[in-house]
Image (tube, one colour):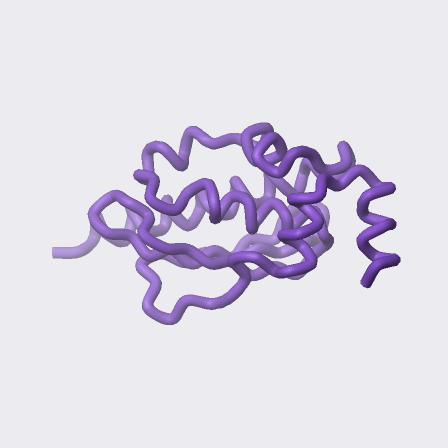
Length: 135
């Protein structure tokens, strides 16, 4: 594992991004979710978000991904950023906020932060549409 960590550092990943990737922080499935969405980005990576929402506050969240270290680090960071926040607050987060929260990822991996943000946005959209249809 030391070689992988060294390669990630040399590639421009911050210590926090590496920790999130290596330890798979916030990765998992949530059976009793209120919102769920899976999305495949233009790069071919796929991200899936599970959200537990109370009123308009995200109480808990998990994600799964098929992708690179950037995808896992970005998904992990975004989950940390949104817990306890309202849906409106989370929608204001952009990819630069995710990268800054991580302390940096390689420039060619910025699209991974965009993938996380897009997937979250689609999960929230699906949640709102479903709520509007409920009696």
